[in-house]
Length: 304
Image (tube, rainbow, N blue to C red; front, side, top):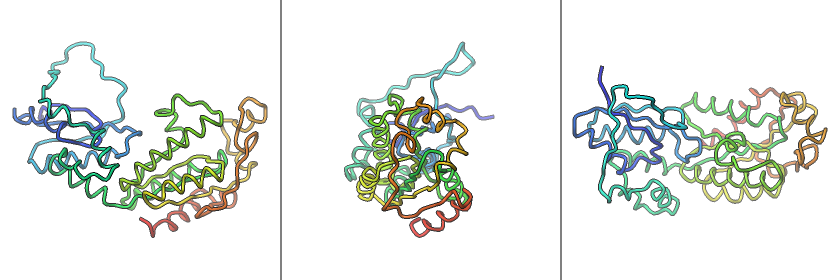
């Protein structure tokens, strides 16, 4: 079996700094094992990052295996297990290469980002950025079926070779919104952060499935106004009666809200504005989640 030098990172995007560190092992004739962390908060999907690395390795005829792994909380070891652990030194020029700066240049439509990218990765990212993005924003009462339909749609898209990025409140609250509670101000801030992530993704050509209650018409109008600047936007109203939502509520959120245990709960103690400018309405009272998903897929296929 081949022994490989392991490198672990976000690689968002993969740039010359990453490549320079790996090059030291490459020059020693050691094949690489590159592990791409599946970080949900990055604007570039792990699959795109994997493709950039693979394109670079092919361009330079390097023996490298690239694998996507779950995100890492920490790297731990108790004793030596026969592997070297090396800190590899690079020049100050290489250290100055920053993925954050590359993303900033891309956001500002400054093509000088290309000079920081190794051959192969630059073309993959350029092709990706050249595509028009699409945000599909699901709105509706709690337990109306937003996340369920988003998950089903993601699978349907993957079946036809299209990768979509999913955003929903549960994902954000485990990552960048850990500091937020559930009062009105914090929920609005959570939506604002979601809109910002969706904007970054769509301006970089991604298809984004965003599932948030988004209860206020003014809020939804602001989201549409902002996101349509950067790509296509579809507002999907997942319509369901409160009674039906309660039947699906295996967390007893509605009951807790009615008992006063949860404050400012949409549909009970906080209003939900019936959408007026939605692009499509999916009635999950009358149709199954699968039927609604098929209807939505047919609706959006002209845009993808």
